[in-house]
Image (cartoon, rainbow, N blue to C red; front, side, top):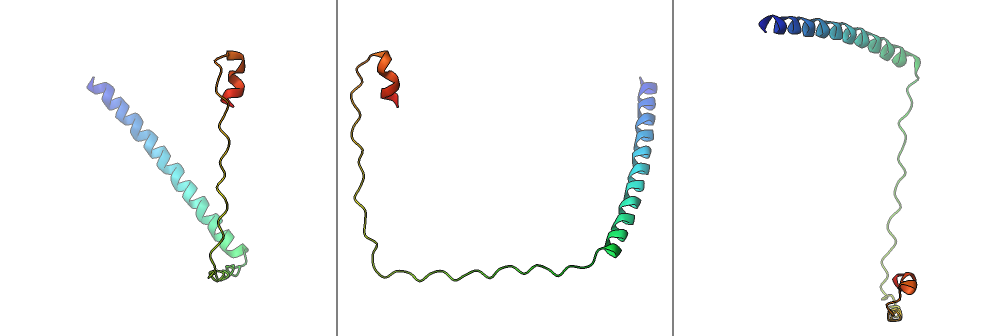
Length: 89
């Protein structure tokens, strides 16, 4: 059982070393790309944000109220299943 764990740990160690090597390679590639981009791309001026317009002045007059809308009451359901769809709608 201990031998199996030793073999498993050695496998994990090997895998982690390989991941570390690949990570170092990717970091090197990213540094090269960053250097290329910083030299190849002209610096753009930062975009200016639009200036927000001031809020419109508040009205001193009250806004007239609209009459309240009240829909008519639905027709009483007769209990017939054929008329159920219309009733539910």
